[in-house]
Length: 259
Length: 336
Image 1 (cartoon, rainbow over the protein chains, first blue to last red):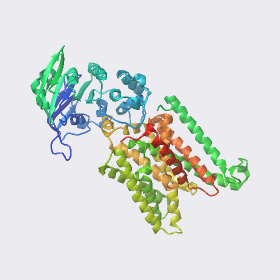
Image 2 (image 1 turned 90 degrees about the vertical axis):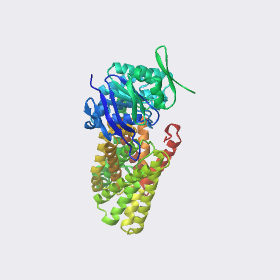
Image 3 (image 1 turned 180 degrees about the vertical axis):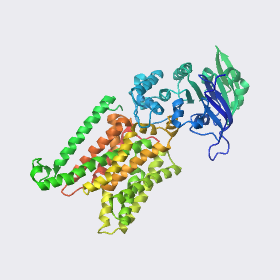
Image 4 (image 1 turned 90 degrees about the horizontal axis):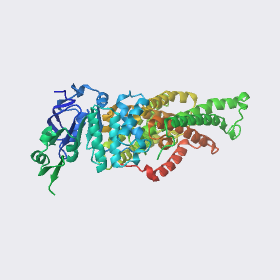
């Protein structure tokens, strides 16, 4: 078996002043160049899991291995050279151009006193091309719609050239066309060898992308495994606590709910 | 709105032009004054009139250089504050730094005597204290968004320290100490001499250099803490370093020029309009614009009327007017 790129080993995390642990002895393995999607209700601990994965939070117990080395042994900069984050939403009051904003993704590769050079600009431009925003590289970020802004955040993370890409509900603000664009982009990234971990409230997106599907509830993994094994009525219903039915149409997986 | 300089080349040309403008302005201002008559002095006079020589080299030159460096410091501190607090409508004066620094300077004059380094030390120490107090208070306020909380806390802390300055004035010896304290409150560069200017210069230049060196990283600090951490810049250290540099430069400015209000607010806006939001170009741009702005204000302060107009009054008047315009412009509405 190939070594896991990211390995959560019995990780527990409790927020200060919270009684319940946000993550409770969670174990999870990400195989290289695969997509892992996490489904779960609000408060399941999905975002906490991501915050642990890029070293923003340190586990209370258990450990996280990045490429076989304990995450605690990396500096923030070293983690950022390997792990990129696409936050769910972000507002910046300054009118950066798209290119300037994407260029910020180069930060972990630059010494704090360095200015970005030609190669960095090229990486940022390439990232903008990938998400289809290259033509607007010199426009202000305030001209973007919610969905386009999401794509820009992805471009920034791509400029970071990470081995692991974390996405926090990447489709939350996207219309159907942009959702399709995103799904295609993420497939292309795994084909290029990037390992992806995403949280979502959108079962369609999880079903369309995931190699591994993880169902979370109350800080614990209810079920994790290959998509085909985990995608069933019983486990999905247990995750959300309401009756759900899986269906297949033209080879596409869908989830139905009463209403 | 797209900046005027659309490419790095254009930005560099713009910075070059501003530098040239500043140098010409400094040269012109050196010859401008009320001796022997209001207006420009004849350069030929500098050869044979000892009084003119004395005036130009020992009074006007240090004063002009101080105006330029203080303008740079206040503008740079404005850029840093706006970026670190992710709010285009703050400047050191809003967050308690200026009033606290003035209090520190007054306290030093009252208790420790008016040695330059003591006054500066007092200004820096209390400037930091004021900023820290505003920040901690803003974290504890349970009302409104982050921007609103920050501004409210800044108002409260400023009020506290200006009350403290009031106490200092009341306690001060009306003949020796009170004039000196009053000078801080109104702001002005007429008291600048070479020794005074040179004493503050290391702190001013040190602060400026630190801000300039970290100018690209400043952009990261405008992101929220999670995003910045994911790019390898987790909150703490870098924010503290640039804020320290900004407060040091501001407090050093205040210690030799008094309270020069509002200069740090508009210049960053102008710089962003010219050079875009990226501090790689906006920060040096703001520095140059700040220097030009303050030299012009100081020229007006010393020439507009027979007696001097305190510089702080002029900058506050112009700054507050510009702030009103900014507030009512739709594109710059602050969002919380």
